[in-house]
Every structure is written in structure tokens, then in C-alpha cells.
Image (cartoon, rainbow, N blue to C red; front, side, top):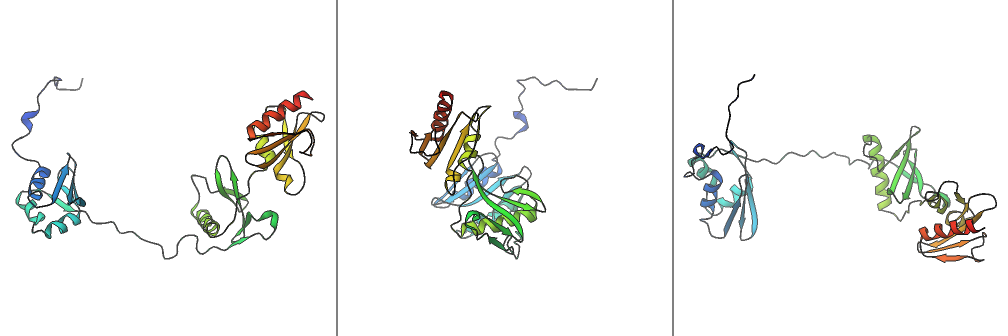
Amino acid sequence: MDDYVYIPDDFDFSFLYDDDDPSWLDAIKAEIEKLEGFQVEHDEMILKVWHYGTEIGTAYHCGGHLDITPSLINELEKYDLNLEAFMVNEQIYYQLITPKHILHPKIKSGLNHRVVWSEDGDFQHSGKVDGYHFSYLRNSYHGDYIQIIHNNSPYCSFWSSIPKDIYSYFEAIWREIKNSDRLPLEPSLGSKVASYLPLGYKAYKAGYGDDNRSQCKVERSKKKYCYIKRFRDCEYYVSPTINHQLMSKRVDSLNKAISEALKMIDSN
């Protein structure tokens, strides 16, 4: 059995600490607050200093030393307090926090890619970036997103892991979208309806032109079906014929339209 030492739960460790000695942060606070307009607050780890309500610097207790922001040293110097000399006299070990050097690329990612949108009116949501096909899409789950086909493989902008070279394509396309009035391609009404239908039902596009995306046929069998027509997000018509003006019922949401469609089909 390994050797061990039993320590009672109520053992008093206070003899290890000298309560008469102020902590490093307490000593610094007392010295700074001798100056007019300075306020200091700290806990066991962090000390912050304000001058007439404006934060001027911070000290972090790292155990064996303090990390001090240069702004604190410089601001106190203006009021004839040499904080570094004070800490040396008090045997307070410290180091100044130096800002990290940030490297910026000479060419921002995505700037050197060529984005060409399709001139076809039916495909204004798509185009090519450096010759690779892309589409600007929207759905209720992912919102607005971009899909790129790169070397026969699809990549979507909402993926959590994207290769760097593909990511730069997305940046270039998003920049083009931001600087234009391009709108994403929304799923057709048939696609939306189909995702809510129970087993045994199906939905697909119906109509021509714009109606092809805003109208769909909901079908249980060749003899049991109806149509849903959307005019706007809060105006839907459910009808037994493709002409929504005949025997149609108007509702104010997609869920209600689907419910009415199922009732209409079951009543046929």
C-alpha cells in the first residue's frame, strides 16, 4: 500500500500565511490610490486601475510574478509615480505584457478570384468562380448559403470544416453578393410542402413560368390530389384544380395550407 498522510477536514492552514504582510496587489493598490482621481479594484488574480472613470491598465497575478500592461506604467509616470521602481523596492516580481505581432497577408484571401454570374434570367443565383460552378441558395434550416462544385465534389459555406483554397472562393463570392442585389434561390413550394407530408403523399411542381415555383400539386393517388398556390408568405390558396380561383380556400400560413390540402384529398 502507498504511504499517505491523513489530514482532518478541520485542519487549520493559517499558520502557512503571514496575514500582517499585504499582498503584491494590495501594496500596489495602496500606492496608486495616493494619487488624486485614481481608483483601484482587484481580486486574487486581477487588478484594474481607473483614472476619473477611464480604465488605464491592468495587472495579472501569475503566481510567481505579475504581468503588467505597459499602459498602466506609462499613465502613472505622468503623475510622478514610477511603478516599476516601487515594485523593485517592494521585491515584487513582474514583467510587462508585450502585444503579439500579427502578420497580415499582402493579398487578402478571396481578392484574386474571378466571379462571373450567369446571364440567364432563370439562373441569376448561380455562376462560376475561377471556372468552378457555384449556386447561391436559401433554405429554412441553413438560411442563405453558397454551394461550390470543385473537381466534381460539392462544398457548402455552412460546413464547419472547409479547405483553405475552397474557403477563399466563398469569401470572393460573399463579397460579390454584398456589393450587389443578388438574391438566393429559394426552394420551390413543392419541395417545402413535400418535407411536411405524411407517408404515402407526395408533392411536386405544377404550372409554368413563375407558377412552377409558387404552385405545387399534392397527391395521394392519381384520383386523390389538390393544388396549393402561394402568392406571398402569408397568402396561400388550396384548390381541387390547378386554377386556384376555382373552389379554393385561402389560408395565411404554409402549415395551414398543408392541413387543408390533406383534408381536401381525404374528402375526395
